[in-house]
Length: 382
Image 1 (spheres, rainbow, N blue to C red):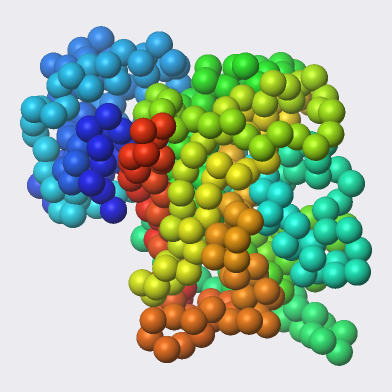
Image 2: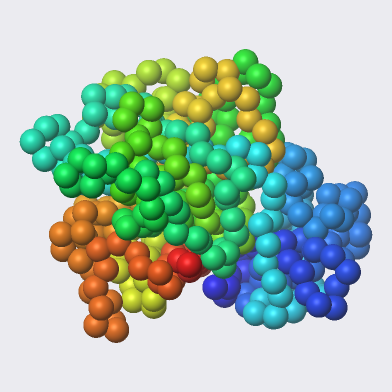
């Protein structure tokens, strides 16, 4: 998916058969601008940041450099060359993922999950309103869109209580937005909600695959492990936060008095995700309903002094809205498999089957109502 608006200017890493190595690219409409080739002319003082074909050095350079390069691209990109059709290049993971953290920031998602697994109890745990719940994932299993996802295996507990081992029968998706850290922080320092833009460069679309049956048996008392660590797919386009200024929105108000380090919350984002399975759109989750903002997630991630590193990725957790067709996982859409989702080919899905292709795209809604494409993440179950 391309078709990026003129002011979006997302970054990628790409290769092509006629090139001698990876290049940093910028999305302009349906084409990719070769920034590695153009940087010595467009931004000579910063050309070395793009020489190795990844975003790593550019991310570390910080907000002033990000703004300088963006300003030049806004003026020069529409007429610059060389460009090539996006469909003719191969896109790669554009940065080295240092650490990966996944949050649980949607009240609607957390409430649905609680009602499914604790039907006779409170759907939300007592801590949910007080802090952004998260867990540490595996950076080494973050893969770029298009990478096949092998069905994971693990220990499983059957309905009669017996324990076995085998492939997950309840493979699921989680439609999320990811945030890419550019500038790190020192061990022991806290990054406040007001420092978000000094550290976070941009966003990507995320599918944090989940093996629900493996997870259900293992997660008490320490949380997600093998059920979540086998694959996290991300879009190859990193959209700079500077391109999303007109999509900022106020988050839902908190329901309790928050600790000082989580206030003020910072801005939310008015994003619309679209989830398709084998070409059938099954959900359109709205990011604007997320109860915890990206700035609050970052503040909580570092409040104990944990350091940030260039290339850290943290994700929002499943994005779900209040309506049934706004749920960002099959667990919710099928209510744990009890009401399967109908696809256009006449089949139904409670959870994913081998051969299924999941595509999650996102767009930002500006204050004047325009929808700006932000890219997509796709993966096929094998």
